[in-house]
Image (cartoon, rainbow, N blue to C red; front, top):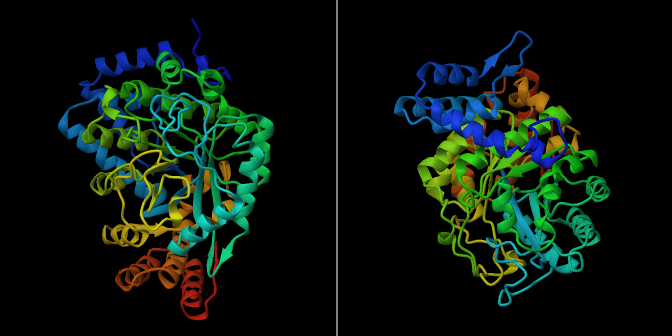
Length: 482
């Protein structure tokens, strides 16, 4: 039996099966322990210390108790505090991005993904560099500035050299006023040497979903291919950080295994990264399994109803207040609208999950990784966010100013996002409105920007941001940043 040790670099020790089972049992025993629940809720509430640092956060056991709690007034308190934390650390900004699928060639046998090797009727595609350029221009013409590139695991079709070449191509394309300023990478677990190459290529966050932390289930769900190696996959973030990538993104595919197990494992992984590397995950994603090609989500018997999904998001926000939380177009407009106030800080917009999908007039389905529930245009999503009181942000300043890893966390924990990320969001939103927005979106956007400028506490920052916004609108200048 493996011993539990958050500081270990061995997967079965920092994601410990027995400890997760004990945590689930502890949560079940205490789910009606009002005194303990109130203590945990008070600990989670954001508070400022004498030096200005905002303190909050829970460990995986405390958060698991709240997840198990079904006392209605306490659940409402969880949601209330989740909203408090989101506003205290991130304000009302929502960062925008889009996925870009480079290739769906894959040698793995993952039973929940249509890219699996045995699927012989899905259209296999791999973008050439000219096709990458065309996709990027299509995304730039929408207004996107931040991409997450995706590719199946295939050492012949998708070697690291191909990924690096695509990144170089993406960063090289300037089209009208469009430019991709940040490329995040979601590719298979790899070596320290390859992570160094990705870092040198100027990537933003390295993202890798665990899919499930339950090892026995993991091995069944990944019966063939290199992804079958649970330890190598689970230890990937430690190799990425060793390779110099200090912003990494975690996630599980909810619905594959029992959610209480995944929730505890996910937070345990976050605590492990903090304990070993001094900084937790930059982002946590919360995808749920969806229908795609030959994949029927109904064959997985661990599906999560919307109400529990919302509670999971709120409890993650209470546990890791400094971490960005991502929800994709897997979810419907209605679900996304409800969870935006519970901790989500990044969303995708106008996503196409097929290889080469952005250059097609009609949304192609023959090579999609999953069905897209929210099929609105980027302009519609931007306007919807503003109508609901959120600032759509196209900002990438922190990466280009070197504020990554613990530097970003320091900015977040000291509440300086309001003097840095907030004005950056307003300036990049102005760029979007001038270059890409419909008249209806412009009308609500310019009004919001004028109101939000007043919230910047530092006079000098507010004055500079106001002047920069005027220059963007009237002098065709771009890319200001704090």
